[in-house]
Image 1 (cartoon, rainbow, N blue to C red):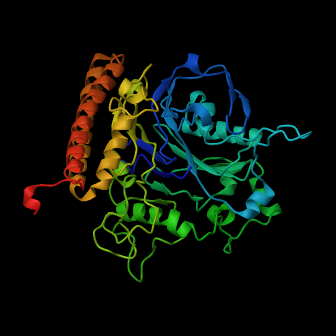
Image 2: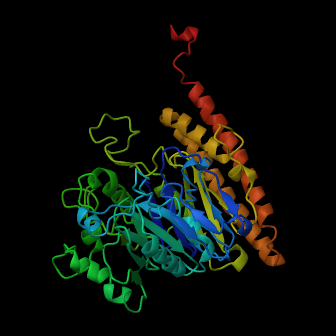
Image 3: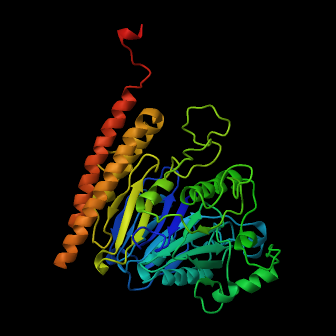
Length: 486
């Protein structure tokens, strides 16, 4: 699924938390966010797409998920935080090349044909969160469990998966059908991932030895050598050259997003524009990670995942008729179903370390709301979503705002900015309030009550925003007329 991911190490974040965030860019998929309690976690899992069957452990933990409302293609849980305060987002669709797939083909589902029996495929984005998140107690454990599943069952696609706990962030990339590698994000860095094979440096010795900062399939070194995959010239290990794609589509679909994200967080330490630019929108060698020029807030993460090349000639909403307008795939694309920011904090009690920020629809016009995930249920405004349009839930209200604001961008964008600013400020106000109250009372059973108050605020502000953009759109209807028009 075409998505965009950002990972923020604890020394790069504003409050020392780790943050992993991803836009889930399906095709206007209807989404909800729920809590999956242990009694609701099946012991035997079967993928809808690949028919892969997995026996799951007996001791699942409670976790949040943002599944598709229509289950016809599977759960597609997207992301969540479990009760051990481990976050996971799965997956960022990435790219590979023919040499890799020739050596280790995808494990694809095969239908029964004549005497040829049905053959199950591997695991994929539909499955990963459900099969991994309820059973891990750290980000590292997430890599280890998913790596073992990939080796056992394989996969039918190329994906990147992120895990975080209060100390670490790990990023795993699949390689062909059964191989994988993972790298720990440095505490002082942030990572940008736009639908391409991302890791650009890797220590195979560490991965096959101490596993301090790197992990991988046990035979990855032999796999590279046997199949002549290494395209590096200087003796270094750049996985992007070994396992990644080298296609023209990267120059319009993927690389421009990496360019814009880096440009936002490192505007002066790197030259992004002009004839002597270090990197341009079509550069294939934009680094996987940077040390940001300033610390990164939740609002920064939300903003960059909402962006559409503001301040550049590529902005599709600019009035000027510029040939470059709209030529690159935006980050805050129209078809996003859900975006989550999994934030794990180390300065509050265990029961409230995790905060999950949730948005639905196009990030360009929506807002993010925080919830405490260590609860037995989430407010109906997030969890009670049907396939029919309704203003009674955050998903459809966001989609309505998106469509109205997009069509009247010039006059509605200020209304959207006010909406986003109001929800952000009030969200932090309520988090501060409930953090303090629950910590002082040493009673964290009020987390569900806190979520209800936060969502009540969100609904009030969202209804207000919808009223405003609807009025603005109505005033621009083409069938309007007054006698002064003569």
